[in-house]
Length: 581
Ligand code: FES
Image (cartoon, rainbow, N blue to C red; front, top):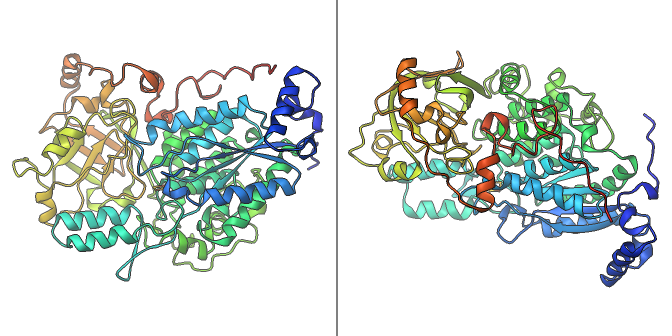
């Protein structure tokens, strides 16, 4: 394909630096104030590097170094790098949940790029919500954009055992509560579970979304699988800097990369990885930013035809470090073959098929062949019924198979505090056949739809050896979690969704093969309860939270703000870029 190249006068930054007026005098004189001679930037693409590094984000500690490698590449390619800090969204520390702030970062990305002289952007993220937020903002801004994934951390290690982020936290916490390990053991796990820079190395949201970003076409091929401390990660960072400058001259933008087909490729990738359920919400949101309507039904269709090939915890056995040594994402994508559309363009200018042509699987215990998948088609199921008219999701592969079809008595908690106060009480009327229900944990009610969906199993049942039960909420669940947890129930209970109407003792029917989720009471009784339902007081009276509760959409629409989605996905197109004076 012949590529029409831009001239320096076509650069967006030309309006800041290249014209002869009073404003541009200010831009040039202030750039000189920062120590740059005019020949260092004149006529060159200005590359914004949006860095989510901070001293409270353990997954991004190496970004202080990586950003220097990105800059090195940009300088070498004849660009002018400008590092801009953006919100850090640190999964372990930010409360009540980073999800509340995903859209905040997405807006910050878009408006930072719009308001400064950026011709192209390098997005640096990896810790859970940073990846979708950075991509959402860049897609909306639609200038050349490339992603630097943080890379997974090394395997955890304790007493000769391999530890996986999140998954082993829940496992050993349950063991501690059941009296199977000591406090000293628990301290040992604490010290060994996160022992290098990088994001969680299980198939949590971070590994899922960075892999999705690569399959969508936003990273250099192979980048998402490289462990953070590996020197090849640093080399890829420099290559990313080199490439973004070319992308600016070629005017290769997110709108050239995000199509309904490339979105299907990314979703198929998430499914073949047995990826985090959080990716559903993020993929829907970022697709809608590009005007692509990704529905839960499409997700379910793709789930039914996609085998799970990645044998990674929590669904499988290994960790991301093993996945990299086994051939990495490129090898898995090649094995997916005709389930992907290889014609889709990616940031290096090649198609997906070209990028994976020479990939090989080196260990097919870690990356399974299609002929012997980890699971044939059970990566994810979308449920509907009178309890979830707009959908709910479950990861059947992470649940005890005997719970896939189950009817049980509801034990209802009206919010997280209620659950925390009563779940371990000996007086709680619960047995292993019950269905635990948590209300008010959704996008508006919690607020921010936290990862509370792996509801705890009551202690008295844990002590009896019970390790899984059907649990239902409008919350999300960490990708490193497991269990028969029905999530993302929409509409959420806080706004009067049917989950708000469930009472202790109601029978709830889960039927994963039939894709059903129902409360077994009559329509009349449901209507009576709805008429008596009283809407709770809003969570916020002012500030970002107040804006969030007014504008956030439900989980089936990706929890984006209603005014940020693009035409074609049911929303209005954002105003054109304003004139710059
Ligand atoms: Fe950052 Fe898990 S805490 S990815």
